[in-house]
Image (tube, rainbow, N blue to C red; front, side, top):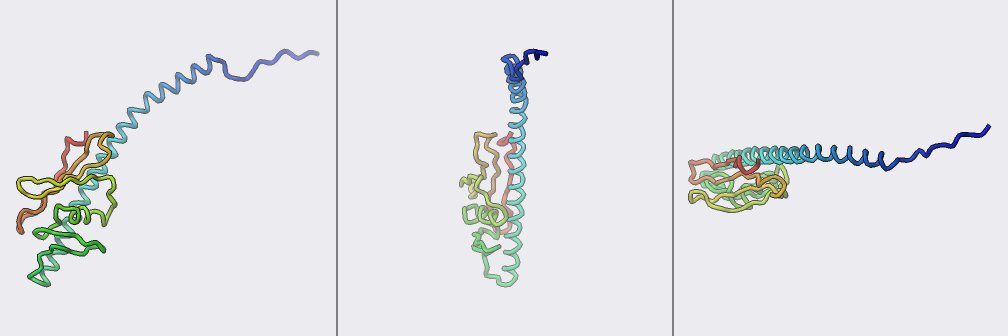
Length: 163
């Protein structure tokens, strides 16, 4: 008995077009979600860095207070914490690369931060900006060093910088 002719089991042009259309729709739906996830991740990273900067500054200040209780002449211009030499001004980390960024790097490496020096109301400050800026805004916080021995530094998140 002769066998009926078999049909090819490959994709037809119509099958391929439908598959490509489905893949295109899935990509169109997934891309905005991927972007919003990336933005949210940057916001979390910035807030985590801000909290770590606050903790690092407080740790430096606490260590400085201990050193000052041992020796009244100590001005905490340079303290070793966690094997790192950290510069200070007015008993807090300075707003220089050897100050707060060095203190922050004892907890987490920060190659994704661009540090920019500036002055806020006459006080040295650092602007910490997450790289790359093109991904989702600049995502910044400011660290203004203590203006006097009785003052604390100003650390502030710039909310509008990271949409």
